[in-house]
Length: 554
Image (cartoon, rainbow, N blue to C red; front, side, top):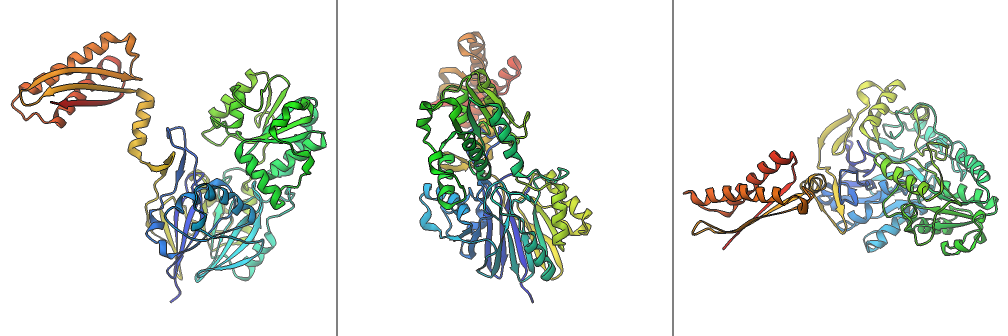
């Protein structure tokens, strides 16, 4: 009997980020990406969000490797965390591995992995899996679609993909190879990028942004130009730099990730720029404004990013003012709109002119839209389909599109994080679920749970009230307090009568308890103090702060 193939989705289904899936056959496990997600506004204090690695830890001896489809953080950013507990080789293009290496090296974990470079069209045997790396176009260079030959036939994972017919680096999505595989071997299961599945039409070519940039640089001749985009978007950086150099400007990078990525891309030949056109950021101050172009991080309005520091007047390198034009060459990621708006306002307050995607076409998506996705279905003609990489609405739209393109209704599966599916001779089946909760990282720790996040939200929204009391439990006496200390509930210096009234009510409740026949246990007295405080706070202010009773026994 032919071995079944099981696929377990640990992240990336129902969200943008945390992309991670485990393919298992004949007792071996191949990891497909291991990414992170950036926190939402309702995750106070959280730096990063990871997949739950419990499933992988329990099968650590079966992992034969990880395929990194491309270098975005939502696909490789989790590797520096999972390698704390596990060890396996990582396969990817030189540029993808270069981006992953930076994170892994910072974590001191390079000795726990082997970074194995693969090339366009190469086939590798990784355990029982025969893996072919097919070039695709995306917003980060050197991405792959992954063709995985298994005992159950070909599984094709699109990676993040668009069909750009005029890519900046000339590296096209290899539709001919995908078509050849589909015609000769057939695609048993297709896992497809769903990010823009609800967007009609075709995505714009990245080169179209270059033409917009040319016009903008011409319009703002004589002014210093600061541009921002993702530090991994090397195609955009190439175009910005080419336009700047053609208009007689020197190019400087600002932001640690931008500097690292540009340096890596120049070393690997991913960026092609003359050395004499690149200057250090500290040399910018000595150049006329019309001879400067700064390429900066901070396009998402991150609080401590280079662009945010410019907007607040706190930048060490640039004092932005009336002689500056700032071009935000990106769209805000959902959830970041407020941060981006705040930065734009700050820059305009300082006198700068700001150009962003709402008023000029200075950004092009890296993900295929509906007509491109239809083209892929027409070429691949998959037997089974599972949409991946997207919010739930994106995946539902992609499944609907698959049915329009001839995939049978019962052969387009919409899965979510934690779902496990099995492919065998009889077809594709849902076979279970596994833990796939969000793992929250705060600083050096990754043990931030839902309860702690809930407490942080309460503190942020309503504040805290601390009730301090000292008792003699043996005699039933209240020796001191209660004292009411608050932060964020009411402004204490102006609310002394309210705090005193609250203390009186809590005192009365504690004295009643101490006078009664029941045992005077500390936990019971703390519950009484919390209840009395909560009732008073709710009745007098209608608010619900966190209440922390501290009853000390002497």
